[in-house]
Length: 318
Image (cartoon, rainbow, N blue to C red; front, side, top):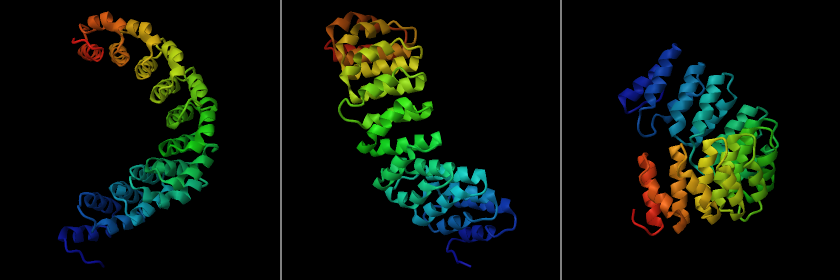
């Protein structure tokens, strides 16, 4: 039996041996409130508890820690027989921040279980670990759309140039909208205009979420060849797409967009009026000044604020 200097920790260690699983689960919850790391071995041991609820609680408690033992222990629970435990482990691993933690997850990227593959990819996506590029590339052909989506996200965070051809193909050809949307967003790591045709195609996608992502990515890349398509997107049936298109036209500083953006200043949706004003401020054309002066008296305070800012950007005090 391990001795603990802290009497409270010693008492919790004793409760972790209680035959009642509920008592052990509450003890794990109590450990989550401890500072320092003296209690971490107890939490890691609880990952192997015979009760699923205790294992799940331990996985949740360890999400704030990234020691090699804790990461490896939680990762093993991705193969747990209990669905709630598996999900708790996946959620905990998704909070990882240290690139070095990716090493423990590499074997799980090749698991025969699609849930495990997707969870491992989600866990490593923000770690930007170079070792994850190859398995993520391979996962772009996975039969499970969730795995493909998570693989796309990993490659997007890595800004992996070698993946661009495959990502371009997924952006327009994957049968699942979530994968297409993720691929469109990942194309934001591109340089040059090689991805322009795919993004323009995505701007006409059947799913509005994909069109919204395409409008945002075109603005992020500041692709001048996208201006006409973004102007057309200001008439999209979904306001989310129109809003992104307006924002991107501002980033492009497209003079061709002036008439459409000026017209959007009187749109019934206030958020679109606000974005149109901000975009006109980026373009800073004298032709927009009369409309911006009127918008400075808009009933919505956010629109008024944006219009006044736009006037200042255009060289005129509101």
